[in-house]
Structures are given as C-alpha cells and as structure tokens.
Length: 203
Image (cartoon, rainbow, N blue to C red; front, top):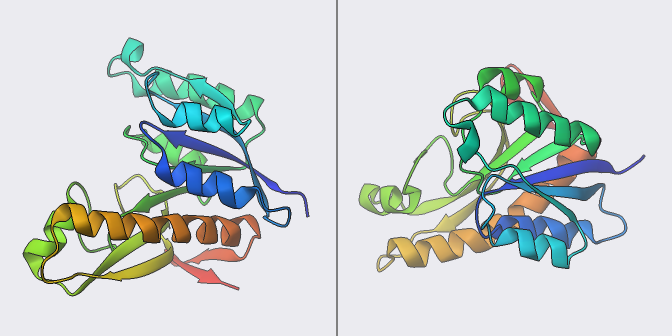
C-alpha cells in the first residue's frame, strides 16, 4: 500500500508536528509528511520542518482579513499541488469554513489536550484542575465544523496530581500527545478507522 501523503498545519512551535515527523521517519510508517503549512511567517515550527527536509509553505492569513474562503482557496491549491491525502492540525489557530471541513471529512485530524468531550476550548488544563478531576489527557479526533468535536480516533489518559498547576499538567499531557498523535495517524493511514453513526470503529 502506498504511504499516505500528509500535510501538517501549524501556527507556532509545532511540537506535535515534530512528533509526527519523527514517527514518519520509520520505514514502515504508513504515512509521509510532504509539507508543513503555517498561517504565520514567524512560526518556529517552520525551521524545524525545513531542518527535517520537509517542504514548507507560509500562507499568511492577515492579507485576507476576515475572508476565510479566500484564505482557504490558496490553501486548497497548495494541498492539491502536494497531492495531500490527509491533514493533521498541530496547533493551527485558524477556524475553517464549513465547506472546507466537509471537503476533508474523515481526512483531517486534530489533537486536543483533554479527554473530549470534557474541557473543550481554551485552558483545558485549568478547567481540569478547577473541576477537580483525577484524570485528564489528550484526544485525537476527526475535524467537523463544530470546534473540538468530531469522531474520536484515540485518547490517552494522564493523572491529575493534587499539586498540579496548569503548567505542570500541560507538560505531562504534552508528552502524552507526542505519543498519541503518531499512533492515531498510523491507524488512519492504514485505513483501519471507520466512522459509524458519528463514532469511530478501529479494525
């Protein structure tokens, strides 16, 4: 089976991007990272991708103002040029139009630092501490128009310690993210994930 061609979209340092790049170096990994795209020219992850020999592209969102469709038209062109099969969002801080998301239904992945559906949105670690939960973690899911929703592909739990701060908890969850995202991408790239009634089934 040919390896799936993957684009990673970032807006910052791209730590999850680095984990995916490292995993994809394995000769038996079923996906290859063909391009890293950022909406911010100063994103630190661009240098890391270049060092790894991966093509990078900046599509600065600022000239497009609030015209998300125009931004996405340029993005679509780049994805087509790179013959991309799957998109992985890794700290990409832009919302997509419903049309773009639906065009990539079942082919665009995102990672969120909580056990969704708990603690969506901003500050999930602070939310977890304030709620007094004993477990939080990370979730990889397919992207749908609603933010931090979509069929869950994989999750990894992380204990919440009594003396945790948002920063200490975030560090441990991030380590879990770096393990989880490559595992989830592998499942999807191997065509082992099906969506049934809004939930995933892994074969």
